[in-house]
Length: 111
Length: 112
Image (cartoon, rainbow over all chains, first blue to last red; front, side, top):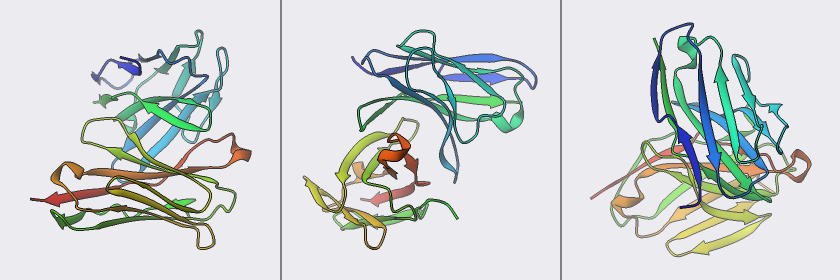
């Protein structure tokens, strides 16, 4: 099925550990986004990409890095995880003006 | 002040009731208005999309945009328990490359 796939779905990290979240889309979308969702805060944009090889900072980029080496993949990295990064992470891609398609999310807990 | 304000709820109504969900915004440049539905432990999915002012109807759902008041609404008629979810409003402008600005989401509970 066409869509956005996120891996892993769940992860527990210890403070200071690193990890990479993978987002893959098969819709040939140019734009891709990483959001985090916390209770009462809604969706907050971390980083985004407007095409292969490009990345840009969103609203809450500190502590995260991203890469878009291939058009279909958008990676989110945490170099040194902190408890404040405990959240649900969503990847999305979009076509033209609207039509954001979201993945099913990654639940990350940092202890 | 946030660009988009949305009451987080929860909003609890009996099955069959008409539900009204609302967002207000401050940026007059917003032209594209969307409602997303998010079930528990799932990603948001696009429910309704409206360009500029006016109404749009899709089955039991109606989206309204009042640009003069900077106010958007989503109405759900004959609400069903399966409508229980969090509803997020989102909007964008051409000059921001259509990047979505999100409301915090309203949790809706439909009681059987």
